[in-house]
Image (cartoon, rainbow, N blue to C red; front, side):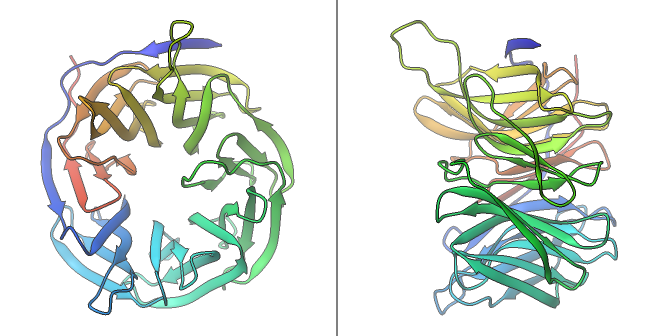
Length: 347
């Protein structure tokens, strides 16, 4: 098990293009690359009637709008995540008129609604993805007792099973991701990592020293998981320990392999981690410098050592980032900004 403090390197990539939306009405919470090389973004928009609608935006590879959809899902409709399905359509997670109900939206490739699942009062969900059997999985926080839950849906959006996990893991106001794993089970991140089998039965949970919460998790090739979030960095006794971005890698059984804590800046946090084509990782989040928050992306090697860091002047954080097919990166801030970076350079 290796513990360490990650340091910053130079030579970050350039911004190839940027999209900025009106300050008062559009929020982009997730953007992913599509099979045609373009991008699909999801979030919310506020039309003239003053209530949020689910918002979808399709861009080509140059960032030019191909189409956009505003979907009236009732009061305060929004999308927190979006992904492509096996048939080229879309699946979204978010709110469908009641912010305390689970909601999954299934769209075709043009953003037209096929079905909506909305059920289970007192719960919020943050991610949804298609599973290997053609169905869907979503999960999040059940506010009744701050417990985590997972819901499995069939291909038509009908609930197959729901499992809740009674420990009090939901103290942080954060996205709680759930993703299918190679063995057909699921991995979930919050104050712990939670691994289940294919039917949602708990296999193991793990917490890690000084790690307060994990906002993002994904499986890595060859087994094991990588997660990012917030940790308390080592600090002289008697002094306040600030929040710091953490990146950690585990073995398949959840035991810690290594951990990297990024301590530059006053505070920082990791919001999303995704693997890269060379076995490394891209971590998106924020850093506080001179009492101002800035969006930040960190590119690491397979052991979590920094290859480069890019900090934006934008007074926001990064909610999502992934490597693109051209070796560059697509990022969104969670409010009104999208950035496309070119391929990274290393010294």
